Amino acid sequence: MKRAQKAYRTVGKNRNRLLPFLLGGMFALAVLSVGSLFLYRSISKRIHTNPSIAMLKDNWKVYDYEAVYNISGALLEKNPFDNNTALTYRGYAAFYLALAATVPAQAQSFIDEAVRALRLAAMHAKERTLPQIYYMLGKSYFYKNSIFSYHYYADMAVRYLLLAKDSGYESDDISEYLGLCYAQLGMTTQSIAAFSEALLVRESDTLLLAIAEQYFKGEQPATAKQYLFRIIQRSDDDFLVMRSRALLGNILLGEDDFDGAEKEFEAIIEKNDNSADAHYGLGLVYESRGNLAKARAEWRKTLRIQVNHADALGKIQYYR
Image (cartoon, rainbow, N blue to C red; front, side):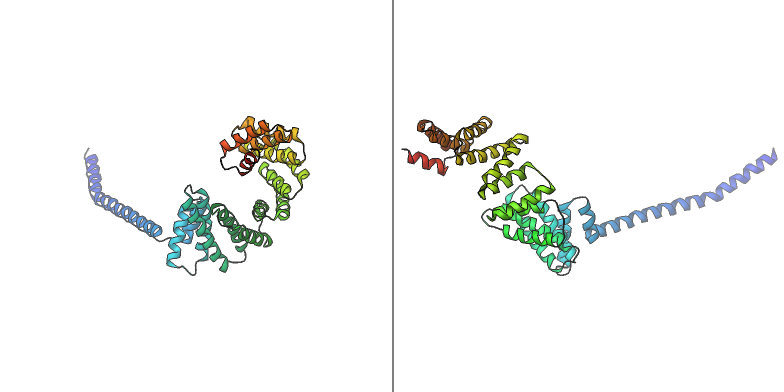
């Protein structure tokens, strides 16, 4: 019994001795935790208030183009003359922000910044990155041409897309963009060649219609018809089918195939009675058969849909 009491007193003394050490350890651990948290917050704050190329690339990887645009802008404010990486990323981000913009003024601002930044970046770019910059510049000029409808930048788009292509840059859509740009420039032969090359890479109904339109402009209606028939037979896109039928109807009118033309125009009207061009074309069919009453009725429908339809106005005035 005495031995047990002695042992108990010994344990109690040891506990009393250990308690200060335990409390001290807990306090040290708490101080260390608070210090670590403070250090983490300090480093984190420093990282976020001091933009870096690493931050730029991290945000680019997750497609945060707004963040890339803002970070690159902050980097260029600090070093506007010797930061080609920031210029390149700013140009890329501005391009994608322009595509996503819903307000025309914003789209214009972003696409202008894309062109400015990428042209500056191209001046000092490394050889391995230059082809991609050319490619993005070509696309930027293409969309700039679309946004600023009263200006023409298709020639600049062609210039940089060809530079990208000649530099060895590979992208499935280069030939298609070139075809569209050549079409805007009225360079029909070059447009057909580019579209034909694009068809070898990726065939689409939109591309088939584009090349059909160029063959028609190039006075090769028989070839245009082959592409139009393919679209009409296989496409699920009503809008593309109606555009194809309208062009086919005009081709058939030129070939004096009035029954065929009538079929195409009526097929359009069945889908969309508000097609001014289809009603005008149907009026031409009736005119060719000598049925001027029906022809004028179709041209009046055309003008009700589109009051400034020049061809319909001309026909109405001619047959007064």
